[in-house]
Image (cartoon, rainbow, N blue to C red):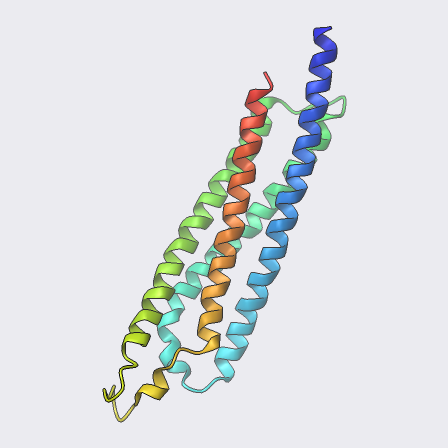
Length: 189
């Protein structure tokens, strides 16, 4: 009787890993596509726009966002491996609990690292845009004859913040699903 219960629990665990792994993978993939689209558009649009020298303050924030995106690519690969582990659990050659938990822990670490980069990038982007917005006071002259109209925050600059929030959310999704799966693995003893 215990053997049938163990087999049923293993099948449910396998199904859960596959389903949640797919949900995690596709949610992160969609968000990654949005991020890469926004970053490419930002780079192309930034080079075509006037006054690109004033957007130099966004560089560190965009660099951190790009680093977070690269970590997201690793996290996507981890999500793909989670689906594979779910399939393997339902086969005669099963991965061990330790092997599966190490995979999930690598994904958790990647998502935490990505969240750190994205959070630092967000702070940098928001700080840069705050300084720019605070200089928009009418009547104050900045530099050599610049006026407040040249300092207006553009939609392209706001798009850079959007790319950062998308990558931050993608890592948050990965972290939540990975933690849930890790809890599920250790609960099924």
